[in-house]
Length: 139
Image (cartoon, rainbow, N blue to C red; front, side):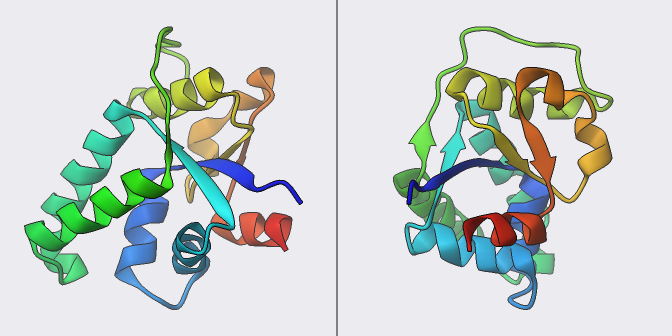
């Protein structure tokens, strides 16, 4: 079976690090176990870093631990350079870069807790799904 390629919205990464009880955490484990391949861009990685470091006290992590997590995620992910911007397209302009990674890499799934923020991505052949739905897809 072909490994599922996905784009992780920042809220899924945060949720997976915040609690080991939910689907977001299970997705992080699946990435670590090489069952899912994440695709990232420079902009997405900087967003991950910004959000995680701003909320490090909530996560109970140090900046150094966050750097290690992000380094590991980079090692496990496929890097996608962005050549064309699709802005503004989404309801929340801060999410446009997530769509751009998906379009540029031809990744068909964005995993997010905020499905409504990705309304219209279907026009690009992309689905925005919650973490629990991804777990169903990969089983």
